[in-house]
Length: 376
Image (tube, rainbow, N blue to C red; front, side, top):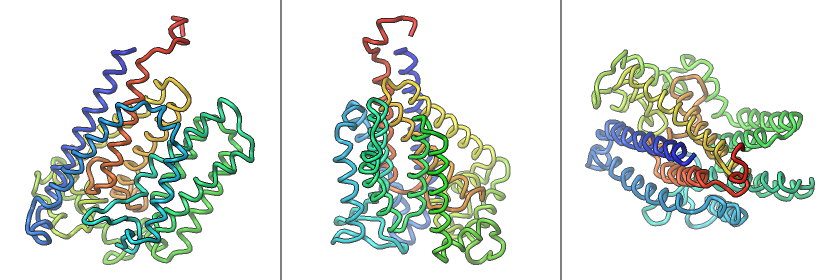
């Protein structure tokens, strides 16, 4: 048991470090020209991302030394703090407006996106709620009372506006309900309400409707809403089988907007070709498999729900990002974990990994109940 969990932990860390290294290489290729033009240094972006990676790795190590059961004890405080941070993006001196949204807090030169942290805090809170319900079923009144802060958190994120993160969090919560054994009728009801809300959010805003139409047929407006998707297709086509070589891609020369954030996989496909893109996809698939496997090794229901929710969050970010880049899904603005430019997302994902690693470590400690019966 101990050797298997140690092996799984080692494989998770190895893959994560590989993604970080590959991300730094891809980011430097994507931003060198832009860094020289905008900041007089080709290393501007990669140095800042590296600094955040170091901070994130230190935080990951620190969090991995904290028992995951601690987060259950402070789940209410965490969600309360999360709500305050999200509220500060709407009102207050630290809110920062950019790209038509107020998703960031700016303190001096530092920018932070609180909605990224919600991927952890809301999952901890909901995992704690589900674990409490399993141990001592909650009444409908208590479910409603505990559901209100969750709805407030989602509402504050949606209002920024950030439909992508809101949809991701709702999907994570529904997934956690599924593994908790909630009745199928309830799940269908939640899915129905969520789907109606998603449709309303798209129909109500013209720019979201345009984005959806661009997904359905990007060539209908090749110089407008479909430009980014078409340029992404051209990047993959240019890469052919083995790619143009690292640093030789043309999409980063301002042909593909946001190539260093949401569309960095297109540059990877161009410079490393079909072989490189498929290799990365396979590694991500195996990585997600290992993360989901953590929930099977958890010692208790809280650890199971928490690890599943956090793993599903990472997996959905990967699926949505790659789906948007390849045209299989609408573009949602979610970065590719550990690889895309995005300092808040990088630090939060590394903290998330610290929690998962602690659950893996804790699973190697056999509880008295399990050790009393060698057949269990």
